[in-house]
Image 1 (cartoon, helix red, strand yellow):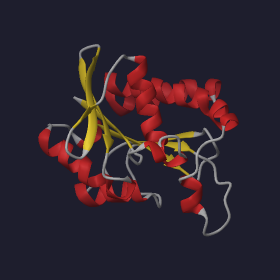
Image 2 (tube, helix red, strand yellow; image 1 turned 30 degrees about the horizontal axis):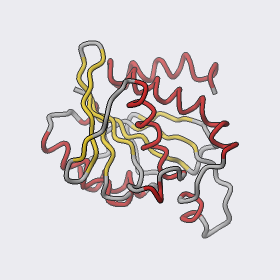
Image 3 (spheres, helix red, strand yellow; image 1 turned 30 degrees about the vertical axis):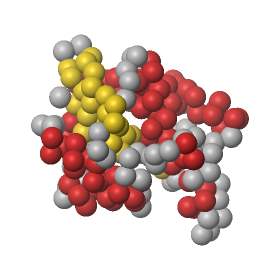
Image 4 (cartoon, one colour; image 1 turned 180 degrees about the horizontal axis):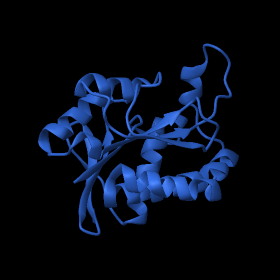
Length: 191
């Protein structure tokens, strides 16, 4: 079984913000596969199948900085190995629309990842980092990540969102290795 957690903040106010790219990508995946999210206590989820694999998509409703609460709750209710948990997250250290995969690692300064590591007491889970750019001045990062993408930016990142959906499809079929292999072969052609 595989699980993909998209990080973001719940509510209409945050829907199209840079910080919500994890939600945006999972929504695109769900739409492509005609899946519909249901509400659980601290997250939205949907269960699906790809080939012979079962997977879950998770969107925490705990707000970004407490994402670990929802992930821990989900994992306590479902038997998912840590290496089969993919976290999709925004990254201000990457140019707009750039994607980076990591099998494990630190929080990279991201409070959502930091919360997950803290609640799970482990950093041994893969992540898909999606670049949201860094067009902000010192001490303005919070406002920047909570600002909405412009229409031009959405057009610019559309291929990267679709590529992220493809990467998640590979992950739900065969985990990090299959996703990583596909990324290596396809990344230069798409981005």
